[in-house]
Image (cartoon, rainbow, N blue to C red):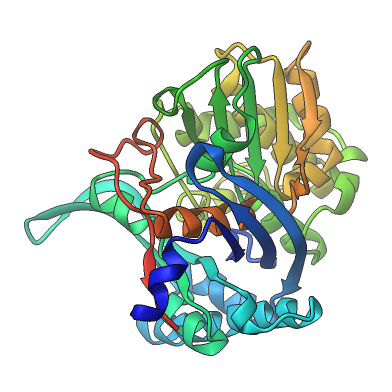
Length: 389
């Protein structure tokens, strides 16, 4: 371990962040330069790419995210396959930038969430929340030759936190403001928000999952039109909201009404959840159903933010590219400046990948990065596991 002694003291590091989100649309890889740590962290994005996930592999990952359809053999295999795929994507980005593995100090990998249980459940006398991400960081480290930090959620869950969301730590570093009350919405498969009141401290940060992001819309687009998602929101924009279905979803979904801290995932907003809604309305126009579920995504976000004073609202994630979602949000948040997130090269596309580069740096620098006010954990802990190459 002697070779790491000087590395831990480096002020400037070249770090790669990588993840695959709830929607399993692709592998996001970002190359960054990071100076310092904590609230004084300075981040520069050098390059970013999303590498596609082959459709059959995506189908298997989604199958293994289902309690009814998964099996332990497939999950075991996928743990290594996803790690290998992450490593290959990282190596491609390194090669594209004409760098060597020796030029990269760290990789921060979120992996691929397979199952997330933020509820305190009892089994054999033990009581715990739990979470599982695959794409083992040891596989990535040994197939890139670069020290990798991964499994960021587990430590927070071990001290009874929800393990999510994690992005508020980055939001606080980037966008706290002395005068403005700011809210940030990340719309991936699941939507989550961060609220930063003016001049807030880390203990003042409010953040939680609000409910569905693109997850249900993507499912319906695949079911009705065999498309991965509603590109540019064209289907929703060209259709009408069915008020009876909208009201029914609002009644059927109990999660978005819960008080924070809270987190959720595909386990809750499952195919069964969606199909149970559709069964109640068998003869409705498919395009109108897409528009209705799109409105609900925006409404569930608004419902969770409506009681906070907001001067600026920033949006990131795949949902930031859906004008239908943006239009619904703008209609709900009247008088609020709604913006697509873009700051110093950190965009709505690469923000989550940047987060995991930052969290890797923070662990190496000896900083605890879970936020108790966000996850509900019993204490502050170090997030991540270091896997030497």
